[in-house]
Length: 501
Image 1: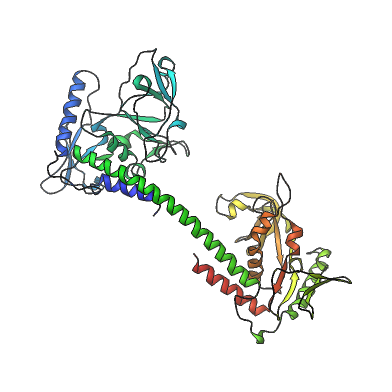
Image 2: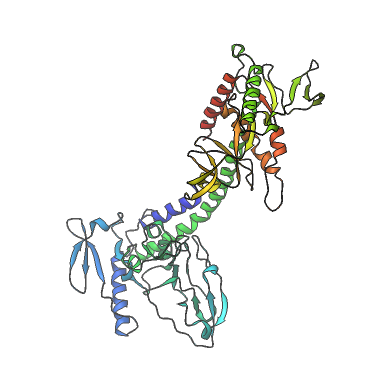
């Protein structure tokens, strides 16, 4: 559980009456509801608010079911299916619109300085943070949402609503503020509800996650009917204070926990990455599985690789340059040498390899090719789609590859990343097809390339659009085990990788 999840759980416990113990000496919440109704009647009489036509009373009947009585009509209906959770006996349920003023009046003299708050100045999260600009009231009193000190405001548009952009307006110039029109403003009726308890309710998952919206994606607004009809759990007044104090006490602890958890997650990810790379390193230098004498040597594979390339060059599927081979061997002095044409030079290799292995350059078993040019509608296999971050698009022509083919990014920040495609389609423009010799076990070669992923990424060429360093890629020395050992290595890598998930 991360810090955000823990905070959400704390707020849920709070509004369910599970965060602090109940005190039998507290004045029950039913008394608060009476005060609210009295205060509303007084304000209606003074013509400061309109009469609430939908005012209702929610109570528990003798049959232990919940009922709602509408005061204007006297209608009573059972609402058991709407009750989201149980609350303590001293608490009460009420529709949100019946206990707060959702359209408070704000008045100020034109010449006073006041606070001005665009959405960008309102903090997200679980506090009541905001900043403001100071402007003359005459300039901002129209065309904006108005609120006075003590009012509670919350964003009504996505994603600001989900990000918990809500606050209590504290002391500001002129005691009033104008803010973005994408706010709802609430005002409490006298000493009936504690503003911070209401604010934490507005930040709870119970209020946020069940919201209903209207509008287009990215610009959706919370339905007024959802807010008005939301069932609000009301604790006794003193208990509201105890709940808020407990929340304030534990949230800083959660922040410390969250910071530690993130650091631990980062460390764990780093350790796992290092373990994965260590597994690959052990694999490609012959230390992950035992060598078995009966499996022979890799020498017989070299002739198969050579014959295959000759055939593909003749068919025009590989360039003639693919036949330019080097011979890497270990001398009697236990050093490695490379013979290119008639010249032999001593070389340094990154690892020692088992005696039954051969050593080649990656270009000898792997080539970057363009793929088959084709016309006709088919899916575009670009990086975003292959990563599951975008939907499929259809193109009319391109370089065609088949399901289970391997393609490699050659342009962009992630150059060197290999994908095995799961369906036929056209490669994205930043890819090349990866030809791998059929004399080799493909998962073994892919594991080798994965080991060098960071090296390839960090050695890109080009400034505006970085490209794969093909010279480095092709010249990577790769140890070639016997075919059966390649299979055993790949199987072992897969098994160990599963254990690290």
